[in-house]
Length: 336
Image 1 (cartoon, rainbow, N blue to C red):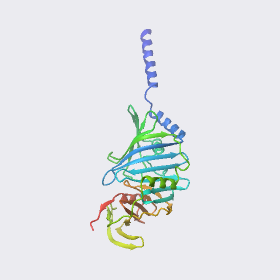
Image 2: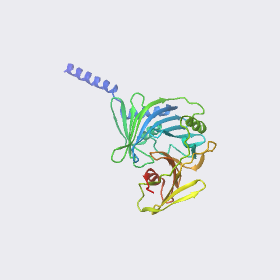
Image 3: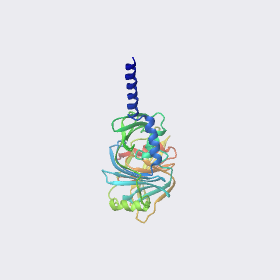
Image 4: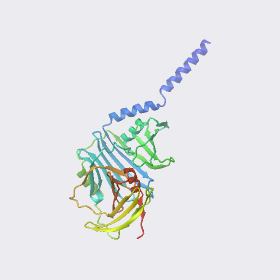
């Protein structure tokens, strides 16, 4: 009996030792994530992003620079159209730059704190740490968390975040709709922790000029403008009067939608702004992810440029989310 007891005790001791050296628990990983985020002075990351939120898939190369003081530089380059946009945050505010058009918007905003951001590591970690109903699993190379989201597009209900076991850096993010189908997929290709930066790396002028050296300013558009219409219209709203309006800036096409949730959509051919023009300042606004481009959203309007056209969507009846939903659907064309 003593010999049997000894072997039993030895077996239990070995099991406990193996368990102590085995896979980490969810609590272990959460604690490590909190420490990693606290110790992180900044990072540089690259990823490929695939979006299925419009009429056809869009693929972007994404580059993110982050410095702990709250400085951000996010470059989104559309691989098919070879055009880029830059989101900057520095001491002067938040900027959305479109170098090919020499256009920039500047506003005072809490971005990116107000919503989830799939390409920002600290945003992903925050979503993991704050969701008390998250799920956790792991394979040989990754920890996988599924969490709730707070994206501007409310069709993005859940996200699956894959972290590398070796250093807890992001490997892959899938953002899912209500049917668990991925609408946005990011694959991270590079991630450098505690990266170093130069003083000018987050300055607006430096980024605009630098981007234009690799992406020349577009020529003025020529030919007849193609007219776009929203494929999504809120319930109780229908298409009303449409007309062309001549202004000092050229011809604008104005579409009015009337009913319970009325709105007006204005579009005109994009003007390439002279190099000496300063940025447009908006006191209250937010960058808004429209899938095919980054727009600018205020309390009663959403503005964006796409396919050589400037769009302006205005309404006093609709909230910001509904206006963004309409804007994301503006890819149907009108036969003239």
